[in-house]
Amino acid sequence: MSDIVLHRTPTPTSAERRAEILANPVFGHYFVDHQLLADYSADGGWGPMRIEPMGTWQMHPAAAVLHYGQEIFEGLKAYRRADGSVWLFRPEANAARFARSAARLGMPAVPETDFVEGIRRLVELEHEWVPDPAGEQSLYIRPFMVASEPYLGVRPASGYTFCVIASPVGAYYDEPVTLWLTPNYTRAAPGGTGAAKCGGNYAASLDAATEAEQEGCGQVLWTDGAERKYIEECGTMNFMFVSRDGELVTPALTGTILAGITRDSLLTLAERHGLTPVERRVTVEELFDGVESGYVAEAFACGTAAVVTPIVGFKAPGGVHHVVADGKPGAKTKEMRAALVDIQYGRAEDPFGWTQRVC
Ligand SMILES: *Cc1c(COP(=O)(O)O)cnc(C)c1O
Image (cartoon, helix red, strand yellow):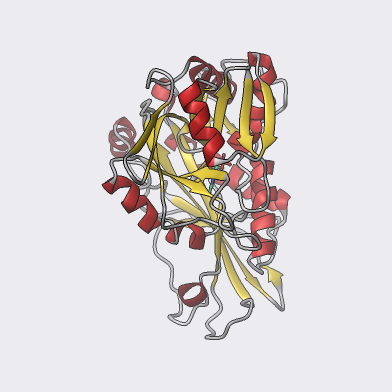
C-alpha cells in the first residue's frame, strides 16, 4: 500500500469554524476534513492508500456488508501535549487487533505497518483538529473495514474498503454508573465473535442497553453465553475490580472477551500502584457477595473512549441492588485513570514505549 496519494479538499473548514467546533465538540458528530481510504480486490490485493476529502462514498446496494455484516473497526486517540506536539498511544496494538478481527470475519489483513502509517499521515494532515489538552480532550480515530463486493451470497467477499475517519472529543466527565445484570441477553458465545471488534456485536447489544436504561442503569453487565455464570464485560468496555487485598482483578480472556488495550495497559500499570494484577474467571455470585462483604472495594469499566468509568453499583432482576463501598468512585480507580492519562498526555514518563509522536 505504501505511497499515500493526497487529494485535498477544495473546501476545508475555516479556522474560525474549527475553533467553534473544538470549543464544544459533540463526540462522533463533527469530522476532520479528510478520510483515509484503500480498496482491496481478490485479484490485485490492496490498492494504494489515498487521502480524500471527507464525504459520502458510493456503495452498490448488493455490497456484502449491507446484507451479511462483514465489518470490523478500531478506536484510538491522538493527544495534544502541553508543548503543542501530537501523539498516538499504542497504535501497533490496534493494528494487531484489527488483523485478528479481520481473520475472524474472513476479511483480508491490512498490513500492520500500513495501518499505523496511514493513521499517522491522516493525523499529521489534520493536526489542527487535535484539541488542546485541557479537560483531556483528544481526537478520536476510527479505522474500519467493510465488505464492498456487490454479491448476494454467503461467503467471504472478494472486495473490501478500508477507511479511517476522525472526530474531536470534548472534556471528560467522571460519570459513575450502575450496571444491569440482564436476564435476557448475552454478548458473546463460545466460538462466536466476542473477541473480534465487529459491528455485529454492537448491533446485538443495543436492545440490552435499552433494557439497562429502563432499569435506571448506565451499562449492561455481560455474563458468559454458555452458563450466564461468569462476568465478561460491561457495555462496550472491559470490567475490573479492586479487592480489599490489593488485587486488580479482571476476567481472563477466554475467547469471548474483547482484549482491550486500556485493560492491558492498566494491568501493566497495576504494580506501580501497589496492586497485583490478576486475570481469572469471576462469577456473578462471587462479585455480588464480594460487594456485600467489602471484598470488592472498587469497580470500574475501561476502554479507549472514556478511559475509566467508575462502577458504583449493580442491579439484577427481583429488586437486587448492590452498592459498591460508599457508592462513590474509588481512590485506586481515580489513581489508575490519572496515571494512564498522564502517560497519554506526556505529563508522566512513558517507561513502556507506548506513546509515539506524530508531529
Ligand atoms: C473496544 C472495546 C473494548 C475496549 O478496548 P480498548 O482497546 O481499551 O478501547 C472493550 N470491550 C469491547 C466489547 C470493545 O468493543
